[in-house]
Length: 350
Ligand code: ADP
Ligand code: MG
Image: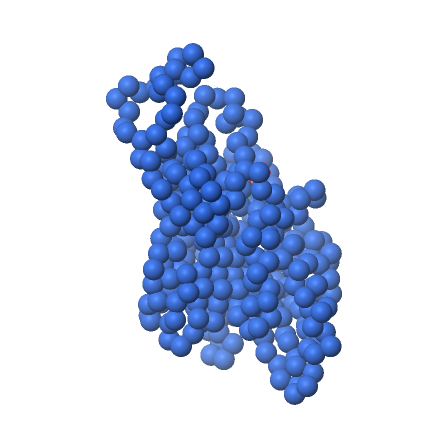
């Protein structure tokens, strides 16, 4: 989607990634509720092709004879990655193209959205065998910088922070809660956030590992505890033109969002419920901003959450946004998948 708004260009790309079913999902007799048609189209809750009550001749447990009709909803996105795609495929088809625009002066932001367990952290961070798109994107950035180094000088600094319960915390440096400050000229800044200079993508891997250890909920823990915080990784790039000495700054933001499941669905009360409410609030605020930008609206409200305030200059104006909606196909996650697809669908609407 390309829209002109207040003399600037905002582009939003919405991508869906379907993760493979895990052991549990495959062993249970939950059915598959996502059918990928091609690399742009999927059907949610398709009509069943087999006899609905028998599968391989075995009566299905837990079938409700009065069950609602299948929704059979068709969704179209900029790109859909099937279970066979690895992080390199996702990188090639999503954020690789951002690099040229970034170096041309567009702030870029990438979001991983989805319920807990849907594959957000796998996509952003990955693992030793298959690094995530954060590392891959920064590696590509360094390789592009190398090619342009005769004409321009580049200085890179990175920050990594967490927004948990509307509190901002530095993940690379022990700190108390940090405050957002409106700094007229530079936009919104996080007072006291450490910017760390890096020379190559390998240094980044060390920093990401360090930052992830400091997350409120360790993001790679396989337990039921959900990841309740937004992890915001940002690269600041100062570009100096060697010919005329002109300097400009651009920013790349890569965000592993908190799980999008509803607070009520997790059956929590008290502190956990408050977390859920704050997460819903910021995901809703983000969705609202993106929808308005996609619609070409002139007035966008960024003040509704810390996340949108922080990313104000990376969403509106000369910006490119990529939203990666992570889903799984098991009927066990029916509601989460449905909600994620609707959120993603609204993000692209014109
Ligand atoms: P989230 O961050 O959304 O809560 P994770 O990224 O931690 O979810 O994924 C949950 C589990 O599923 C992890 O064990 C992860 O390794 C696995 N997983 C997620 N996506 C994929 C994928 N595309 N291929 C293989 N395993 C995946
Ligand atoms: Mg996670």
